[in-house]
Image (cartoon, rainbow, N blue to C red; front, side, top):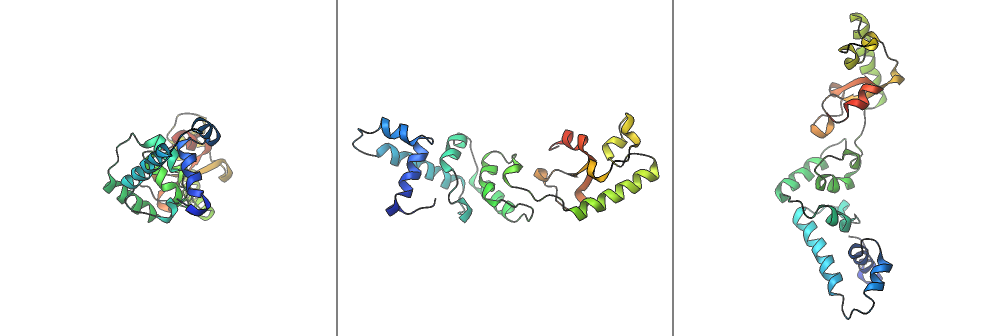
Length: 198
């Protein structure tokens, strides 16, 4: 966490956590309390839980919403060794642009790739793959969208324009697929949206 005790930032963070973001209401309900035991206990519980799940301390952990994470995820079981390995693997992935999202990504079951801001295919890769698929499609009389080409509708032989297509990971990034030319295919927008994370 960020902050220094003398500026009461840690106290403010603790209050935010224990009150679930409603500090005024919490202060009103506890204005006659003779101690801050509940506040201290909750704060220590969150810190102990986070420290138990994430045994490796990274600077990006500082300032995250650990109180919210605790409320959402503390009932789930985590293997700290597996979590540590996953953190290291994700920190070493050059396609992740938001390393601060790694912690909630792991807590949430490694499914919300939007937390990581995965680097997408660059324009040169898209154009190269588009040109290759279009040439192959025209040569075989089939669509340059691989999924349209195996279909049975009017788009089976349609050659889509580049701006009508999206770059897609053949093997989903979340399942280990790399963001490189070998794992890129251009799909028509309809098929790309339908494919999702499969």
